[in-house]
Length: 310
Image 1 (tube, rainbow, N blue to C red):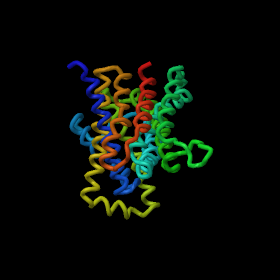
Image 2 (image 1 turned 135 degrees about the horizontal axis):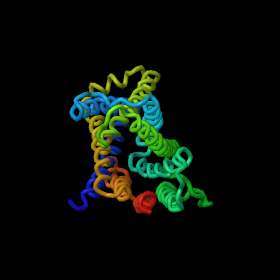
Image 3 (image 1 turned 60 degrees about the vertical axis):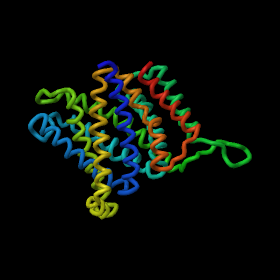
Image 4 (image 1 turned 30 degrees about the horizontal axis):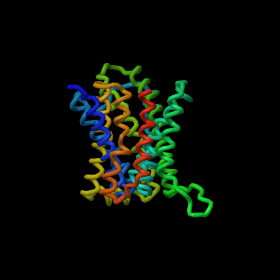
């Protein structure tokens, strides 16, 4: 079917949007750490079911210890630190602004790849960074109340810092995942389908994630919030849907999309979340829609597209 990859990519953008909105709901209802712990557990269960159906056993294929360590480091950065910051920013500034700041992730990934993998940063990438930052600045900055009319931040500073931290961790975690995936693929003890390899590797990221959030729960309230929420049907439904739309539908379809269209087009269409989320965020959370926020989101997404299309 013509444009199948493009349609799947747009579907992924809607899936990421659903994940962000559900995560905001879940974080406010269950708490940041509890929701993340439950998500990690559900992901491991779903992964085991997937592996059982596809390969006849619930465990991922064996690889080297080095590959496991790289993937777990990626999980520590991306899941424990990154998702903690992301879900905390959802609580403070909302998923609409949180997703806007996540357009900084490609910038971080490009810089991290330049440092660790010696990948060159093209001039268009520098332009993309500038465009993306401009879009975010248009949205979150405004004139101060004083007579000097200096620019001031329109959002709580701690929410912005958590959002920036989430974007940085996602970018760094992505590069660490690539390094880990390369080690994983080269050290496999048996052949496997290329599409399932990221799901194998993600298990070890989740192991690091659930370990980190277990420690946070232990030191925070001794699992009191977990025991309270795990018996709440609404909370568990939100957590399950967040997991399905994120690691499974989102990741699975993103892998499928690049098989039917170019990676650049797929990545650009999948980055439309900051625009798509504006209307449902207004409907669900009464977050106001302003001309500046729409223009800022459009410019930020345009900056992201420059990373992949030029």
